[in-house]
Image (cartoon, rainbow, N blue to C red; front, top):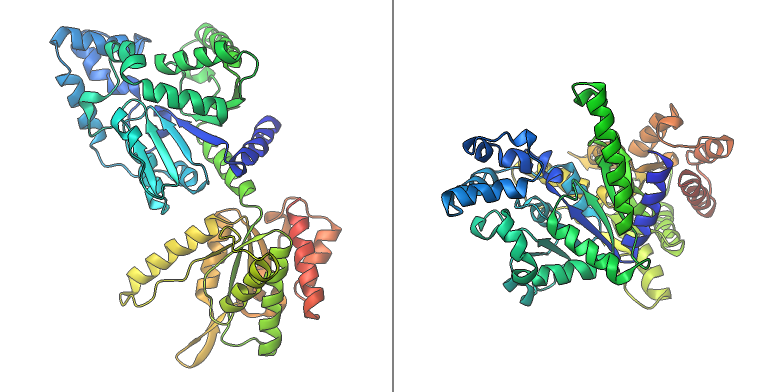
Length: 476
């Protein structure tokens, strides 16, 4: 990730934390899930008109030509309904977006991938795709999706032909007013959007004229021009020159282009936003039917004190109810949150008890895996404690904790294994110790020494100091 994008991530994370961030998703954002872009949506229509869609740049006019020829929208409606009635799964980018605590989402897409991903993330989403819906507010909503060009289930109202665009400012004034307000008050990230949409151009122009130099800074992820996609050098140079003018022109609207080489880098950028946003969130993984070298009272007190100190140091805790560990995590956190601060802040302690009573083993394991993925996706750091359970009267290693370690690695969490607590935590410590550079960015003598101390049994206060110091080192 280059310096410019890294600086953007820092700024955007601050905007998210201040509830001032918004997303604008274009057709390119749904393409990875299998939906077509505008050009391919209109390909068959162009052929019927005897035109080559690859030679056309004004696709709005192309759709209008179809309407003019047939005198109605039936063909266009059928194309929209047929394409977007195909069931598609939302992709990893939609999942990451849905996990981010962003309230406002705008899109010109007809599909339902954004709202589906939000619903899957257990968020209450309020969808607006026509004027009437502006007067109705969904109770307890924590996300709003504005579909300014309509919805796949109402193709006759979709914005597609030139007539629709020419009447938009009058017939869809609510969308223009709402988007104008958000562009003034929020920082947008445009993804998969070409900026060829006449409505957006109209709104951005109006804001530029009304607010002059006092416009809010926005950002757009834009793919670089590739020479191998052109038949000859001259065509590439022409396209590159035009692209540079386009990027420069975006600055008039205070939109800064963030250049990427390939579209899959969008995932990297979104993951980095999520990681930095979650850097203060710590997932505590642990279970214990016994405590090894620790007396039970000593172990429970250690977990209690660790949880308490994490909250005091302004970290947030995410945890399940691991046997022998979960209760101490909860009481330690709540003691600091409530007894000292006299208030309950739900963002400081997120608890996700695993659903019980599911007889089918496959169903239970699948659901538990989803729970683990959801919890860990909300964290930037994962701490591992103990890791054993009672099975058929015997103490065995906790395979669930091992699964949580694998998920934490996949989601690029920073790993904090407290090896001296034994069991799976000890195994994780040994595995990480083999190659510290694989898990941490800046491995120096101080980090190595502090990591070693996580595997040494000392008094509780000293061990907690070592854990907190290590967390600060790996967050650098």
